[in-house]
Image (cartoon, rainbow, N blue to C red; front, side, top):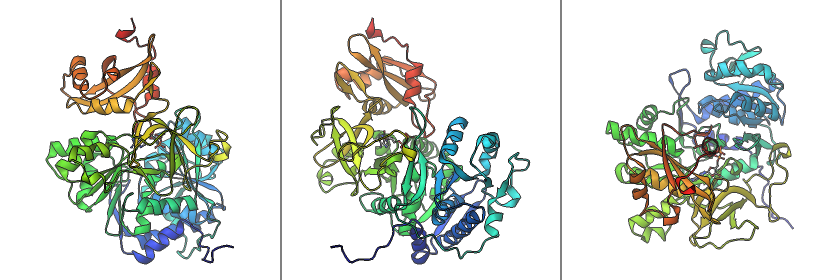
Length: 544
Ligand code: ADP
């Protein structure tokens, strides 16, 4: 026997239809690539997404075809997500910060038929176009007046001209909810990048999860600025979640500098924003220098890398902005856990509440989690035992695009996130490391993340990274690599005495080196791979 309710395929175009019906006048504001501030509404965005869908069909794009985007967070990029998936295509967001060779690999692997790009990337596109074997049409996402002159790209089309040639009555394609809607490649720190092919169903279920009060907690009264780019892990699902609740959406286009972001937050009454720690580090320095506040901002979501304690403290105590520390990954659509207060945590003294906020929050409904040892045996949820963090659920990857990487699930259907974590009795997870970054000292694990967070709490430290370096007795020992703040003179002894009361004695780094800057990946994280390469022959003073 089956239940007798309606079958209503969970398709992403329903989100923008809903936004237009129930919150049609709610604004979408973009600091555009061309320079001006662009404003329109969810109703306008829906109609233009339909025009784009019709234009893609006219260009010969068929159901199941991939359409690539090389674009910032803009109203046009938003239209492309809904327009492409709404005509049955797959919106393939390409990270423009990758190396040109990786971009070529990804677009060819995805077999993109059309490439939509912001004019900021005209030079890049001209350079790689001859090597893109499947792309038939290149579309500059701008109006005729701003078309890149002499771009050297054949078949170059203008986005606004394409839309102007179409009506707004396109009928969204009704598909199986398991049909693909989006595609995003992991950054491929080891080997070639692998594609995650999101289904409509996964995107819509993730949206329900993301909007819950103990997740992102968005509402129609929210004004949301996703600083996290749409080309990285679905901008944490915000472009879908904002439509589902009818929130005002504010987008920074090509701008990531604290000055521009701060102006948008103040001018547009932003209440909610989300980005990686590096962005917030810059913002806190900006606020300190200019003496400004955060206006109407209530919540900042920090994820992508661990949020340092002092960052959480500064937002909450100095600026009255609540921090929600979140964890997830491209393979998880991406949200896995979000840190919001629990009934239990609110009874705790402030310092203990802050301890909990430094963890990465509790898993959302829709995610099963377990931690295991190397042999795959489950470990207790005692907040102490650290193990491989594995997840399953309707918005978690089942296999990579085209089967790359083979079978990726264990016998119970769990996907290994590659992270090492603890889970406590209240369900809060704490990411202690990526499995490949963990430092194995005498058979025990040292958390590089905890050491880094302790180091950046030093007032003269701008950025810090810890890697494991070969040691003849202990196998590996931690090396701390530090970038000083401008004008600072902190030295090795200062740092070690600062760390001593903060971490276990046997965790103390065997050496501290100072550098001008740290290498970062295309998603703004410290590149441990590159650091391990740079320090591959490093001799620790304790190794003699
Ligand atoms: P990339 O591999 O390009 O960095 P992802 O955004 O998918 O792409 O990275 C996901 C990884 O980022 C996670 O597996 C985890 O290691 C790390 N991560 C994400 N959020 C956090 C967080 N709040 N604290 C610590 N690590 C995090």
